[in-house]
Length: 414
Image 1 (cartoon, rainbow, N blue to C red):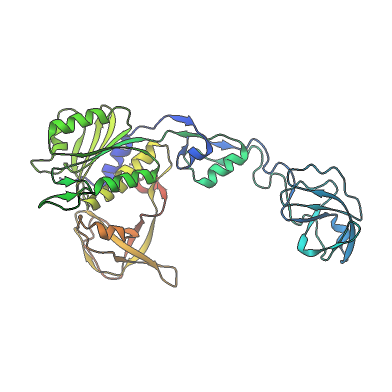
Image 2 (cartoon, rainbow, N blue to C red):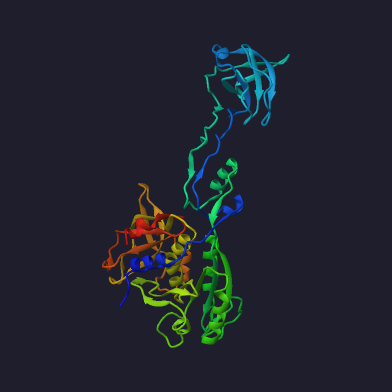
């Protein structure tokens, strides 16, 4: 009997642990998830400053341009203006420099003309507040800036750096990975013997994991020998937060992952009502979450996206776990298995009205990795659908977009 996709997703998310929190540098925080809310301790900026290179003036002096003013100061960024402007005076000022006392507007340098004798001609009238950045205009002291659960991007880290608040995040997972199968040989193998296959799965898995920002430990190719696999597994569980394998989880006599884990773990092996990616193993080995992915490369990708990537994000404390989806039109007709959720590899374009259109990016067998390389999205055909006619509406899971949906949005109250 096949298990529904959502049911398995719930089980995986409920069984993975939340990793402990650590304080990191601003650069190290990029890609990690905040474990605590971030509130501003002070106004940002902390003082009024100029948004332009130009001249600080009293706006009332410029009502009837052109007007000539005496330049009484030159204020650079980082300087403390020593003078107070009075009527008939101005101060040359640089972008970011503090506003001199008495000034209430900035005239951009291109709206001025330099004169002899330390004077400047103002060519345009200024209004109070022109080109002045107010104190606290970015963030007010005490304001909530970021919520816990946010996965940090460079802009978030930059904001925290400007505030002087060190990021406290959940630790990134350490993931052990390996491929299994006697047929596998290294990708560098120049010529293949009959029946041999270059191992592309580890390249795929390592790239996906690295893109997520986790630490990867690569244990290579494991042949179809139970004792060898058990030995590598004993090493892999030490100091890791998750283990992922590809291959060896189906019904074959040489599926060593199932054989080796049958007696020594809480790992269960399931048939999931999805295509590709029906065979899937999940559980724990010595309390370490274990993900047994299928052997076909496209099945590896789809299983990773639906189960492992959300689980790793949950371990990192993220609120958003699943890729974004949009509604679109499938221009190709397609027959699918009505008993499964089917994921089609598709290219996506927008029409002149802003609608999304998708077409199959190649063959849809689970070994056709090239179609995945050209895909922008997975068109999701739900259980019970069967045939999708040309022009039918489908959900498009955008595989190159960041996560944008929470567990509740995807799985409800399950």
